[in-house]
Amino acid sequence: MLLDELVTTSEAVAATRSRLAKVDALAGLLARLEPDEIATAVGFLVGKPRQGRVGVGWRGLSSAMGEPADAATLTIADVDAMLDRLAAASGAGSAGERTRELREITQRATAREQGYLRGMLLGEVRTGALEGVLTDAIARAADRPGDVVRRAAMLSGDLGETARVALTGSAEELGAIGLVVGRPVLPMLAATAPTAAAALEATGEASVEYKLDGARIQVHRTGDDVRVFTRNLADITHRVPEVVEVVRGLPVHDVILDGETLSLDEDGAPRPFQETMSRFGADAAREALLRPWFFDVLHADGRDLLDEPLATRRTELERIAGEHRIPGEVTSDPEVAERVSRDALAAGHEGVVVKAIGSPYAAGRRGSSWIKVKPVHTYDLVVLACEWGSGRRTGWLSNLHLGALDPAGEFGEPGGFVMVGKTFKGLTDELLRWQTERFPQIEVRRTAHAVWVEPVTVVEIAIDGVQRSSRYPGGIALRFARVKRYRDDKPAAEADTIQTLRGLLRD
Image 1 (cartoon, rainbow, N blue to C red):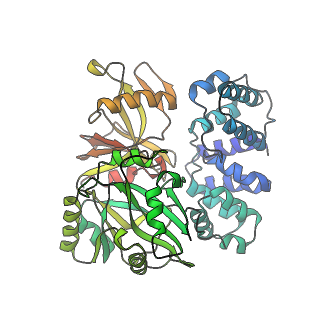
Image 2 (cartoon, rainbow, N blue to C red):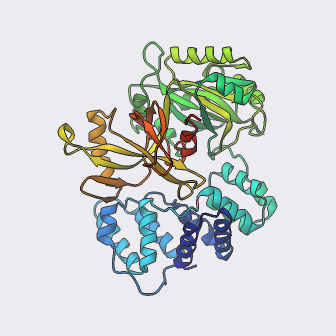
Image 3 (tube, helix red, strand yellow):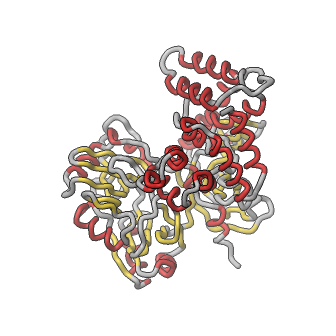
């Protein structure tokens, strides 16, 4: 298929706010693809080519951009092959090699195709073809039940491969996609509530568990073979040998565990999040050791537990994880929930997560079955731009433009980000130096006063609340926002939503 067909469909999707129209357009495109183009095209549509980031930035792409072609001749396969070559380029001379590859491919692209390639390479694709919409389109094009396609995508962690099976395989093959020990699945996510009592009111009887200030991990074990994945499904087994050692000692042969890992001080209290992330992201050994804590089990010795109630999974987890199970209590009493919350805070943790005792494990979804509770309002937002500082901060990028996720497209493109405020408070000199170095590397445009960046950087922001505002498209502005930390462990797609923030408004 010509790349032009995909670009045309993407433009049509971006031009409409109707979800049904988006699904129709995408389903029509999917139905015309050759089998070996399906996974690649799906990756292009959601701005996530299978090669990942290929070392191309705004400056390099701008300097390599050739004059556009008059006619569309570039195919999806041509672009996929080019990305393979870019990803493989390394070592001395790789920058020049990338420039040559980019110039060759962009000179074969029309002006519209050049714009699409620029957006895809820089992570700016905003067609509204997000995974939820595209999943529905796959189901439509393949004439398969939507819930079956969604489950397959969640359990495989690969929407492109799910599309290929749905469109070219049998219903049995699609339905057979399930948990595989060693293949990571999307983690279950939590909503938020102001207090443990309020969360318990929403869930009913629940397991009220400590919320650790650590890094999310998913651990797979078959015999002595252990693999550890991040919440982004990246394999970091080689970085966490102490976690691997703990898991090998558990009384189980095959298992998939969900949990957190964090670094402890000499007294057994949690170290600051930055220290955990520094150790978590290191290829070399560090002095600080990581301890794993597990709060769920998805599979144990040949038995899938995803659809079992949390009560059943807790019993199995206690048998397997023992002292490595996250502390918590099952209760329907708000006073008990608040006591556990106070105990968690006193132990140096963030708060609690309240989990409905009868809930299944909803991989890849954020629902009301899990509700996190922190003592202050903190939200994970995305950096959209950064202004140059003044006075003592002259020469540094300082004031952050903050965006909340808009998954339904209520205030813009589905899956885009809605600006909700700015802040320069809480930024240490170390963070100022870091963002001044980092943000030009992901720059998409700039003015004399600010640098606009790819919306990929998640930052945890503490606020006193929100207020109504006509200044921003979401109708709200943050009150007394300040930076707590950058969240290198969290993708932008898991940022807090504009709907969650609007929920703080008083009637």
